[in-house]
Image (cartoon, rainbow, N blue to C red):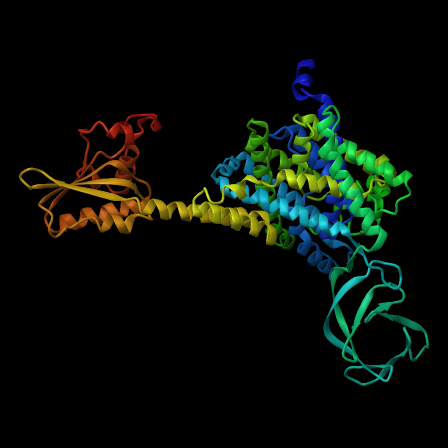
Length: 631
């Protein structure tokens, strides 16, 4: 047991401090993504704890930090909104039904990820080219930077002191004329407008209040209509109205951010015995508290949010009654059809971001992780999180970079991050709520500087044009769409560029015997779907002698298109009564040809006359001799 503990905690002090630092940096980001997904912050924080500790203990990459990431959160936004609407249509309406659909989707997401690990799909991350990796890192750094700019805005308040909602007008509901609201169809007078008050004409009671071209229900205090073009229109909610900070609040925010960045930059030059990020957070927090600065802190940030799910820290234990938690969800095929597309997309995005982050950690630490094991751990974490009431997540590159830079290398750093989050949820929220958002923004800005691959700007003119284009496109798509689409686009463009370049490399050297009766085509370059057209143009069937050889000593038959092309060439020569033979095919090429058409046994020459053949044949790829294969 002692040896096991020593193995997982090789650098306990640095891992513990790095984990605490990462947890503090994770809180505002997780909460911000919770607001985006329209769920309660406690749902996201609890999910981050479960996913973080499961992946830290059982994942394939020590030092990798997982949590409720934005890349996954944004996928569920539309599903949650649609789920709320579906819940209100039930025979017994259910409020916040989108939250219960979210839990089911997260569990299904986890199942898909576990299966991906079992079937060893994690190895396909090796197919991601380096320019795609650079583009992913740069794009994600830009996304994180832009997300921090939102911290310099504050929510605008409405007439009730609540967060003002941005609403878009839809259909006309009532006409307004001479401060009287009339029914659109019957023309009956329903309400009278007296300043900001809208009263029921029949009862004289105030039913609505008008402010900023919006009509609020006096009971629910929610926007029910927009006032536009002398009429009341139904509305679509488009989120909270935000405005840029002004005056002292803005100056204090900027000052604390710069101070945080200065400490993180300068402290390592004096000593590396304490983590710079954690020290900066503590110093800036103390300055803010004892200096009486009017700065927005973590508590203000959380309380100004809201969302579906667990609506307070004191509700956590009561909501872990699994029977009650899952009693609202209809277990039927319609539910599966509804959540499956979102779960599959979230599972794909989560695995891609996790595996890409794992590759980055491999490079930073000069070690290698186990992608398939990480897939299983991520899936298990998501399944457990969904079952217990938390949201989904994946590996988080920003927090992982902070962890690595702070000295976190072992599993203990991830475990400590998760435990600190749980401590915050259960006990220490009053203390951590006092941390200024500015300190965390400063940490994230320094992380962005560390994450961005600045070397990519210097090498743009030194790498192939296709790689430079891929790098830029992946960065842009990551910023404007999402990570999964960016990676898929990058891999596809890289593959097409590679195919195009190799398609142009097919060559055919032509030589005759001394008597001119035998012509040999020596093929050079890969024969695959992209080079088939150029390959067919090399042959002069009409004018060739009666005996022709095609020598593949410096070529390989790569796919079915190549097999079909050779079959067509052979048939054309035989159709005009000429003999054609194929020689110096590698072992794998022979197997491919024999499986495609038994007639190649009479066309392929088994004898080897050229020592170069063994360089192209790769006999080590085959566990048994060719003669033992059955066709």
